Length: 336
Image (cartoon, rainbow, N blue to C red; front, top):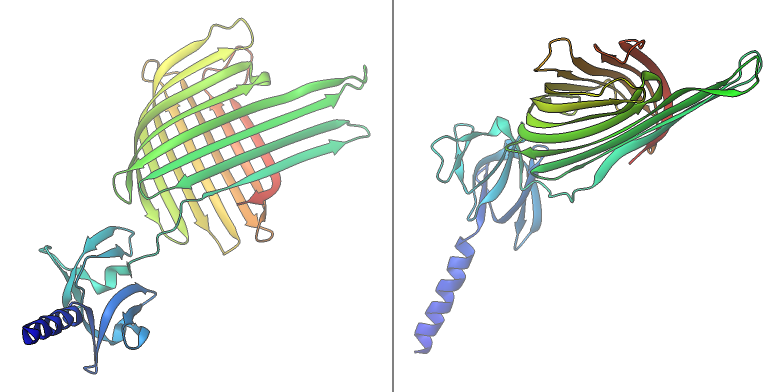
């Protein structure tokens, strides 16, 4: 009886020893244990005898895992598979008819980061006295929370300015504009997502008491790497415009077309360019759009400066108002 028990224990221990991940090196050496991660061309295995051992992937001739691991491609796609070996420069995966090329493998068991809000807050201002007395202040805030399958974005901005009348020496308002927006994205994969958004805007000198836009559609990320991000969105939106004067309000169903390009020139300076268009599906003359081009540079780990040009275009503005509004903003702020 004792012999049977002893044999069972030995069999269990042997099975436990065999049930380990295995890495075979080009020189024939074999490392066993648990593969913890692979990143930057190096794989780390936790050996019960040697502890953590890290070797270059270029020195690995074969690899197997006893359980499924998380595999992230260089394009960002995520797979959860058991690795059955390496053959012809490809990972053989359990249950797959096609293999994953080692050249396309980004990471094994990539770290899971806790979702955090990222964004910035900026301020701009002007005070002039003498032949021209003018004071102006503005600000902007944007933040986004990226989760594995969701993204939430919020933003707000305002501009206020007045001049002193030379004759009356009274301050006269000549700019008052404020707006905010919120957006939710639900990802189908690493590139494709559904979106819903709404935005409000008031502009005293455009005779605009409130412009509301809200809608939903689909988006696609064409490029996303360390230097460049390019995405586009299309869908439907409801547009409603109420005026401060007696001008009748307008509302219509519109298409929404949006694009955003971000390109880093260096580690500290980047270009952000976007366009949002609302062509009416009911009247070809009704179209509203905003095009923004911004150059952002880091002044320190937490401070930034930006120079932006913003074009607002409304093909059917309130009576006696211009179709185009141009704004150039020089701002300083903080990022988080």
